[in-house]
Amino acid sequence: VAAGYPTDAAAVLLAEVEGLEGGVEIDAARIEELGRANSATDVRLAGSEEERAALWKGRKTAFGAVAQIAPDYYLHDTVVPRARLADILEQIYEITDRHEVTVMNVFHAGDGNLHPLLVFDAREEGTLERVHAAGAEILRASLAAGGVLSGEHGIGVEKQAYMDELFSPADLDHQNRLRQAFDSACRANPGKVLPMGHSCADIQALREMPTGVWG
Image (cartoon, rainbow, N blue to C red):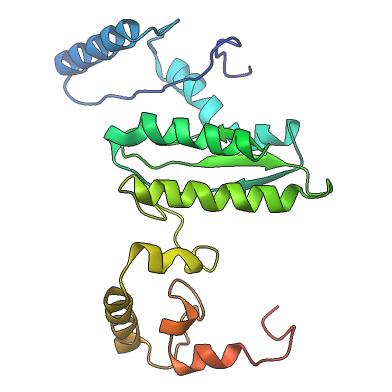
């Protein structure tokens, strides 16, 4: 609302063009033409830096606005081919509806980088289980669409369990060999990215450490 977006819009697409003045005007006109041809209810063109910043304000403050809906959220970071964006968005809504989870899709349409934002209240019984189940389905749907697990935030520990659904054992072994070539003692961010079975011996030992050592 603060960004001035139409309150009755089901979705908002921000498009930014750059280049020589004449070319930019042609590109902007083409984007407007495509928008209207695909049932856009409103098309706005920034005429100044202030207007441009105002249009982007909604995108930049989207995650903060989530707190007005629910106290907790679970953010994903998958990537799919741009030609599959519409398909995967439909699947995400189907998945979250089935699990009775609210979702906001805030993403980079230009490169297919999706950020499904599952919003919830962890104090409600059974909610976390539904959220995690929906999240797992979203990840697998993205992989099935020809995508990958992460576009910019990385694998970390959260997506380790899905690495063998994207890469073969040989792929993971080669990734592990490359990692050990630069960090044979596993001192650099240990226990991340690669599944435990593909890590070095030091990472295997973490399983037997007392609870709280790696807190």
